[in-house]
Length: 336
View (cartoon, rainbow, N blue to C red):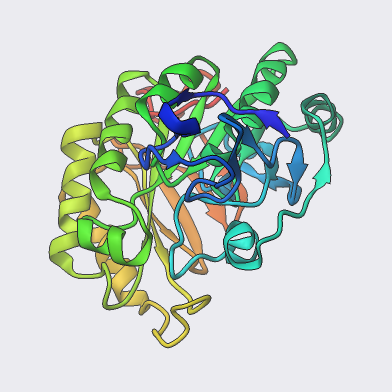
């Protein structure tokens, strides 16, 4: 265990966790909603520091990040736990482990070991991913400081429900993020994820203001968030509030966890979402969880500057300083 960051002591031995937008008030001997932060005699502890439940070397495109050092590898780590309980979670067995199994697994891997393994594996970045990295923030923070010293980038794959305090503390170490914008209805967040929409929107705008490269993912789920009206609102928010250069990944849903009775998302819905994104003015809209070649086109000359099949890049026609090799104009991203 390690004493948590970002909390304050209250009366009667209670504490308030200030790490995410839940702002849990936790009585002595109890845990927050994430079930991985515990109040012991008026001191808040993280129960997952250095307890990795998953570690892999992944293509950065798997995060998905298509405009951040494309073709590079990310050393990806996670601990158990999440501050959401999405009914469609693809990693529910580890994200919901503390809540449903009342158990915290994972093997010890110190920040120094994470960075050494990333360097040894030839990775360009460390990705905090698979579960919700906000709930293992102390582990992320210590690892990210060492990663910067070693010349590695830091990437957050998140539900976007962190607190403003957390982002203020972490943003100097954060290089890129992919944020799940799960829906554009607060009721969907409350009923199916145990969260709220507005903090996610606020944090997306904060990432923009901090100048952190950000991409957005929406898993399109039949009957929950697949209406053209709602998809249009998501695309409009990204285009007007974040900027048309922000990539939007629209991914196909497959039945799992508590949503096994829903059908997979029809491919035509994904194609329609791509069209909706372009109609809203977005330069880069990517279908996810589908087969076939996915292109990045230069928004100036419309030539294909990146071609991907799955997570593999077959063509890359963007210079290291981010210029289209056809017309010389800047293509938004971090290319290196």
